Image (cartoon, rainbow, N blue to C red):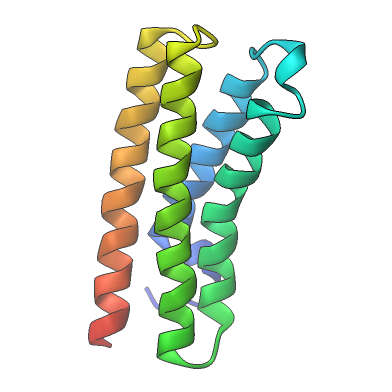
Amino acid sequence: MPIKSFQDIIAWQKSHQLVLMVYRLTEKYPKHEIFGLTSQSRRCGVSIPSNIAEGFKRKGKNDSLHFYNVAQASLEELRYQILLARDLHYITETEYEKFVEAAEEASKVINGWIKSQRAG
């Protein structure tokens, strides 16, 4: 199936699901984190599919690849923020492990998307 919209990109779909997970996790954070880790994690998470969407509409290959790489970097930043949340006991070990699994899947798919766009 040809890709007509950023929503057709599996990397975007996986990262969108990751953002939904981040929103559910951060709802449990203490209220004093609303302008700290809660806000930062959500903004960082939203950055991932947002950059994939923006990269999709860019005209030049290098320009598009830049945004896809920013998405991957935002995912790495988010991995740390969720690790910190676990270490601060804002989320459980089980929640953390589920996030890690979803983040790893999203990362692999984003890397695959980047490789396919470099080759194409």
